[in-house]
Amino acid sequence: MSLQIHPINLGHVTVDASGLVLMRSPGTSVSIPVLGYLITGGSEPIPVDTGARSVEHFQSLGFPFTATHEETIDFHLAGHGLKRTDIRHIIHTHAHVDHAGGDYLFPMSTQVVMARRELEFMASGIMGPLMYTGLDTKHLIDRLYERGALRLVDVDGTYEEEIIPGVAVQLSGGHTPGSLSILVETEGGMANICGDIIYDFTDQIVVPFDENRVSEPTIAGNRAMTTLEEKRAMKRALAKSRFLFPGHDTPALVERGKIIGLAKNAISNPNVDALNIVNYESVLPDAKNGRTT
Image 1: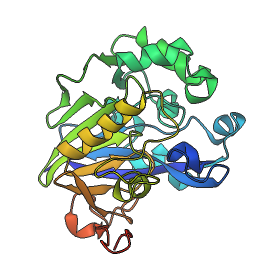
Image 2: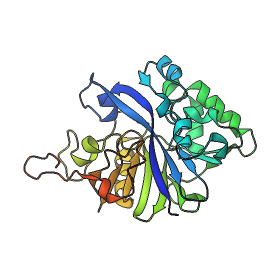
Image 3: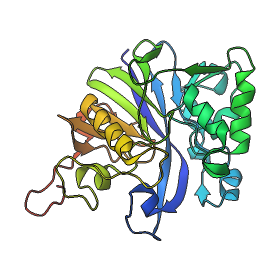
């Protein structure tokens, strides 16, 4: 059986539009999905990111957040005949509040995989208590002192590290110092679960907001890296991937470094194969007006 990637919705958070795309409509609130992924078909199932700790915890930080029963990690695992104790590994793109909050639900026998640089950055306090919360940070540090509960990878951009056959991690170079791209070898080409190095494919990549230079993406407002590092990370992901799976947008189909389609119905939909190009709607730009078709 070939490797499959299932986008799973773990809730919705309301944020400022300019935090997703730099300088886009400041003061305008937008609701975005909080996505995780489940990789199946390999030697073991692997969740990528676990969402927020709870609605109450997220809302206490000042972010409007909702999550239904159908938007919980347990619900999505059960849909694949799994439960938490069946999970041997969790991989994190990064450890922000909406990506690593659900780790505490899993036993210490489940190994969390993340970049050492991400844990260092998380524990440094440099981004304050909102992006990396005290509860999530403490839980991961507790795992650090439990044998086998935490695997810290030291990828630095020059090599990848394999987790299971066909699934490897690579330093992304954007968003946070320890953000990882999870690379999945599929029959249709390389799939990159890229986390938050790209928030909005349309306004950052397809028709970049407030940008008129060729092949120049618009960066996000929420980032810990420099402008150049962000742009390099996005361009690297586009150059090396056939499929891109982000943290808060629909999956994207890539051809020759350009996004040509979006799988708008793939999130939490078992009837849509996110690795089948027939499920991607064209977003090729109209040369006359710059809009997508």
